[in-house]
Length: 380
Image (cartoon, rainbow, N blue to C red; front, side):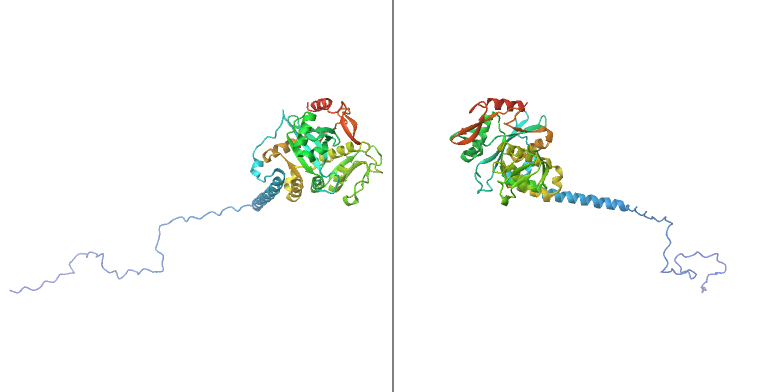
């Protein structure tokens, strides 16, 4: 028996299952240029940074410029100070200057022996003698002080040499011997010395832009000394009243004593000269100010003038303290004193020895009690 192959009757069949893998002829092909749909996301937009105002930029530029200026000034000043320090103190190490160091003193009083000489002018008669001897005494407790002139013709006993004028002591035994005599005879300790070449006066005054000094001569014509050479800007002639001086005029003013024929205005000769020296020193002090730090060109000249013309035993670390004490004394608190007139008293007398005129204490040769007492009163 042969069975016939039975074919399925599709007409009677129910709905056919959809083959998920079957090809859909009605489906659209994807567009390769079409961006596939994404979930809806709120885009993040960076807020623009606020622009700095123009004045902020200007302020920053100005601040950097000022900072650069002070850096340049500071470096330049440091070089100037270092060079001067090497000449004055024997060391240009500025770290020693920065370190705190107290100046030597007794009960707040510091005494500095100022000695002027003309080593720069070997042709000058007596160039190796000390033309000027002054005691600068400063009290840091009361911000006061005085400058006492010691006459170069003071007749003293010079250890190891016998008697002679005090200005000969340096030639015989150097600054150490001169310091010893002043301490012994005046009865006052010397903490430091400064040996000053007279060129320092000229160069320092020029570097500071000149000084103003009041001429108070008893002669109505003022001052006149033909002994100052024309090569040095002479003769010296100054009217009474305020006078602006350059370096050379100031130097001539400190050297003149009116002992040449035709001079006038110097009734006390060497005492007038020492008084003029004190005036110039005070005038230079008045010109020194912190503004010099901001001008390296000017302070460089000033430091150079001092550095090459001044020798001292002040340590570099003590210099700042000493300068601060000096600057703290106002002009009216810095007295100008002469042994010829201390509190209205003349403590000196004329003395003739071997045909030379000299000066001794009014109480007698080697009797310094009155002078020592007067100095003690000044120190009160």
